[in-house]
Length: 68
Image (cartoon, rainbow, N blue to C red; front, side, top):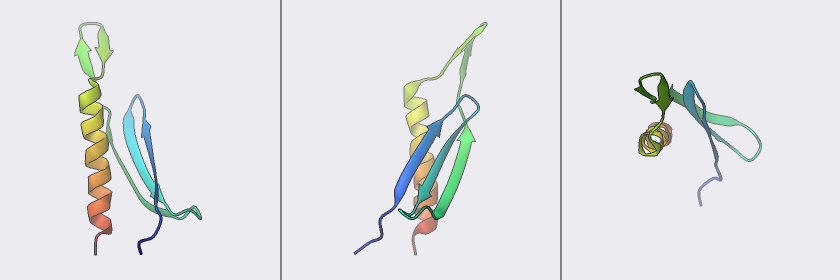
């Protein structure tokens, strides 16, 4: 049986961070990437698909690092 792992994701204005911890609070991994903004003249927004892609990439990065 595997060990329980909790995952947290923070989508912020400057970066997107993903963290995995044990139920006891031990940090197993932490990764971050720059938030992908689209600049449209004086305005900026983020494409939800790009945000999801960054989150998926972060989770895959530390999940693969945890594989034996």
